[in-house]
Image 1 (cartoon, one colour):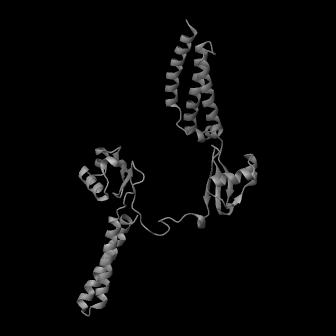
Image 2 (cartoon, rainbow, N blue to C red):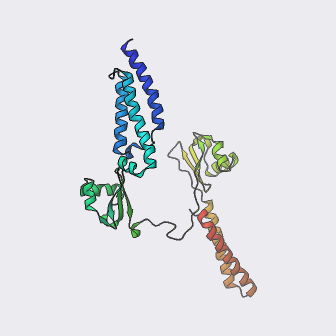
Image 3 (cartoon, rainbow, N blue to C red):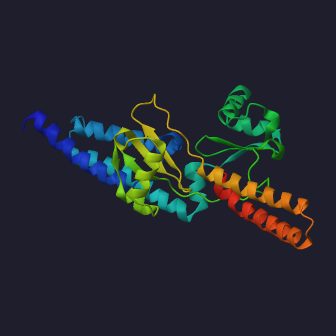
Length: 286
């Protein structure tokens, strides 16, 4: 049999075999793989290459080696799910590098990491000031994760005692100038609503590259022509402002009137509108 034909057949065999094996292997980002995972991937790639090029003349020997290097990581992955001891042997243990704001120099030495390298890794985590870091740990993949001190963390709505409406996945309703009925149906809208929104924004459907509706019902448009600016609708903000104006008017009426019954009615409705605004704020101002 011709050499090129042997290479062709071997390549086809190992191609489909590798495709099947990789479907069973753990899905992991290569940048976050452990040294053991990385070596396994490299060895498998080398064996596949050697078999394809016919450098391993006995294909059965090559397939045996490939099966060992492909199946053993799968078996060990299942074993590590059952045993923490096996997991630690395969992946190692996390190591604390900063504790209570204090750098653990002995742990840095164990990881053979210099102070300059450590500072560089902190900068990757957006921590430019070591004094801001409360806790830091090196994962088994070599990544360093940190926790900032309480007074250095970004303020959240929870810290401010503000309620924020939950968000769901945005739905694509326009793609390449075409309406997508599936996206509209998923959020309970129809083409009539979309046409009205486009008309209000003064944009033609064929000029829209991508259109998405977020969980609050706002339509975002990206046009083919980047020089055209899409006006931002502020219907929700205007509604919130209108309710605020009504509340302010009722408060003013309560202060101006001398009729006690009317004053009581105005004050009561002012409080009612205040409670309405508090409930609507997470949905109208986000």
